[in-house]
Length: 271
Image (cartoon, rainbow, N blue to C red; front, side, top):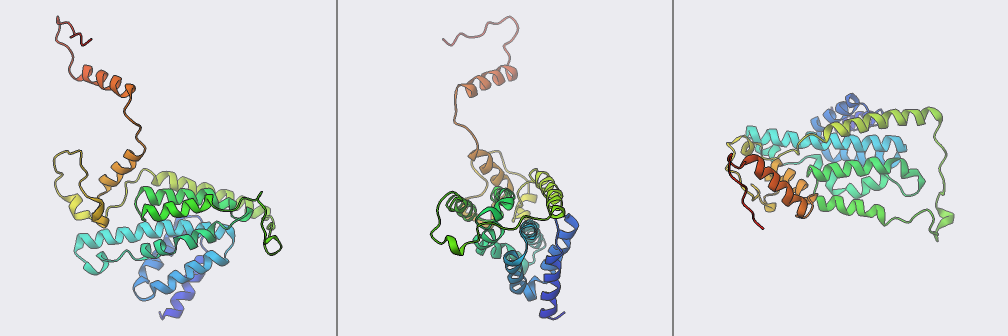
């Protein structure tokens, strides 16, 4: 197919996109297949559809990008394993998502009541990307913080005459369709929370594990070489509380279970 035909077919697929995994997988496969000759053109189509589509179709595109990024990283991991240097050096659409993330989120969650239905789902996807290191956490943090800086509906707006204050309510069938699609999307998000972060250095992970250590196996400077076990450790470390008396009691109990006193001996008084 020539580039124009590829673009037209891709736009048609995007406009028929829904929340089902089958629909998302079909569009992801098409985008990955035609990335080498038409990657930039297809990306422009994605950005345009987030601007022109309905509020429901925009959140579908964001979930499509979630699966697209995961697929691109899996392709890169496989290329590293088989020694394909050309694919191993490219993040494909992931770099484009990182570049235009702020614009995409602004389109998916527009300011005002119109964007409210997509706000929670968008934050969930961004949190998932940050947890799995799909994108740079600093980029995601800056986008999430932009939600807090938006003007609230109760604050006056000097350009009120030029701003649409309300949007037409969705028809009843569209409301029920949105409820069903949200249920499907949230179910898939809950399932994927148990999946470990995608490693970009699969060869290292297949090697024999080294001795246990309190230090991470990779450094922050390693970039794409960061192992999923280190990513998982960082996520747990960020949510860990400070050392307190409860931890000391837990250690004492665990120590007593592992090393019980021999029969007939009194426990040593440490007071």
